[in-house]
Amino acid sequence: MLLDVTDLRKSFGSLRAADGIELAVAEREAVGIIGPNGAGKSTLFNLITGDIRPDAGEIRLDGGAITALRPYERSRRGIARSYQIPRPFENLTVFENLLAAAVWSRGRREREAIDACAGVLERTRLLGRANALAGSLTLLERKRLEMARALASEPRLLLLDEIAGGLTEAECQDLIETIRAIHASGVTIVWIEHVVHALLAVVGRLVVLNFGRKIAEGDPHAVMGSQEVREIYMGIEA
Image 1 (cartoon, rainbow, N blue to C red):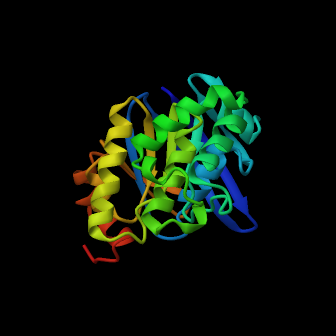
Image 2: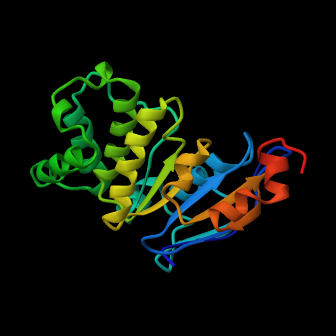
Image 3: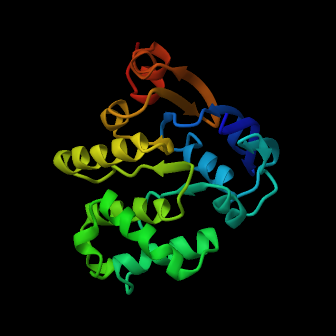
């Protein structure tokens, strides 16, 4: 397994944000994660990336324990993520945002990162906006830049956190095609999303969290059809 999460636990006071979560993700797999607000989805990502430390449990990447590693160490081992709210360096250009991510996440020299950044801009359809200030971008372009900055680190594992939120249907379909292409290039993806139809267009497995626990996992359409998931996630009486 590329990513292996075992009995992961994290509490904030009396709130159990991660309550014994188990998750295994194979290399080149695309996995979706859904759940109501407060289910622990973003907390799980924060634990995987090292933004917060677990109270218990273990995280392994490609067989090696990374639970005690700092975020930059995990980044250099191949983990990258996007955030729900894009926060680029608004006074830098799109290209400069990518260059900063490529240099600092992988510890490379600037000259070595330039060609790779140009390739990422092309893959994320931002090449024509390379010299635009990040602060001038539309929401869709900011979402693309958030994903591009993560890709600039050349990750093996890409964590996407509600990247389709706030987009129109046409923009969402456009983004789906980009994510499909990224996955087809060999990048393993774990994607948190409330726009379920976007997930179903990409992922091969769906995980459902509620109150920090995994309550369902399996084929996306079978999971979405289960009574428990419909009651908890959709608020529908089975």
